[in-house]
Length: 479
Image 1 (cartoon, rainbow, N blue to C red):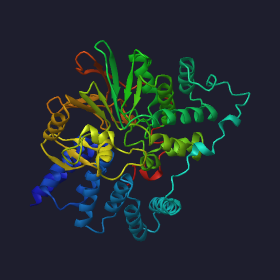
Image 2 (cartoon, rainbow, N blue to C red; image 1 turned 90 degrees about the horizontal axis):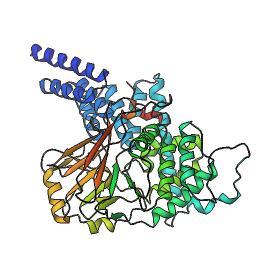
Image 3 (tube, rainbow, N blue to C red; image 1 turned 135 degrees about the horizontal axis):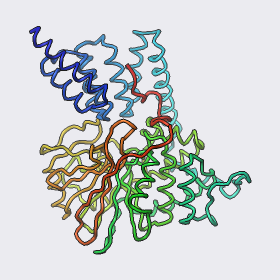
Image 4 (cartoon, rainbow, N blue to C red; image 1 turned 120 degrees about the vertical axis):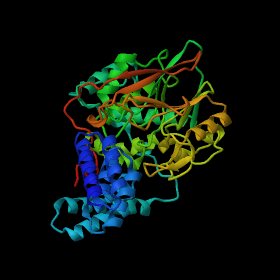
């Protein structure tokens, strides 16, 4: 028995070393092996919980923290882990309860008290928002803006819209301006947001496009506020144009600390080439995520709370999926928690809202593929994981060839699974400055729709750390 416990400890030490080296997948593997030998060790569950947090598997992290507390209800780190998992899932009341426990046991722990106070503030804010929300349609920020009367100061020498319109020259100037870490004038930012809201609100929830035989589209995955890597994509693959169309598949913001620059650049190109530059909503184009992972804080730091409210309105109008030549379906997350969903169902989704906790809209933004058949509970704690049989059934029912999705970091920047029927593309290389992954984008040609993958590596960026604007509760360097 002592020998088994000793072997488990050696595996834990091995896992700890991988964790320290930020190789979280191997850390999880060896914590799991340690648990197989000693399944009653709260520390192993707690350590694996933190590794899951680092890989954004919040559902698994929550389950492990809960298990650690079942084994040892006095294990304080377990309460910390569970609170962090619940915060990541937007379950603020549950998180508050665990922070209360920590503060009660450790009244002199400054870090615990700060987290408790921060979480308490969010719970109260959410309750206040619910109290003032009426059944009437919420008034748009646009109605309270008087953009015409905003003056551009004489000392502002940055890019300005020409007669209120985006031009190619404006976009080139804007990218250079942002590259130098300078701020676009708020009047111009508001003009872009108001105009792009109008353009997006006229689109269906499922956008359908046709590529001619000789035409090629570039599909990019998550960019997550990594502005300098976005510029690198345009450097490698050419600027967007009517003959060089792009589709960016969600998660433009959060985590990376240049999210404002990324999203205003993408919105500018959407205005310049509305029929040739496509944007789909990701799970991070939502209020809960933006509150936790930096975008709300970044907009407030660079502009105002009012501008964040307008971003929130615009995000609600982003389409949820795109079908190319009636054969390839692109969405940020993946397929559905139930069989029988059709393209017609997607067309009918009322998307102008924060996503619900379940149903097709939630699944499009949150689900992930798994290697085994069937469905299982999501590692993220939201939506589900779907197997090759689910993919095959959906494709057959809707007469599609394959799906393209993003949403997950991949070491090579992309991954082909489910016998070639499910493709993941991720375009934020060295994600969060620590994952060491490549980025990728896909070329699809109208003649055969055969995916062609292009990989790239991260480029240097100014010394502003990822998550610089994130909620302090999500700085995961905790106990």
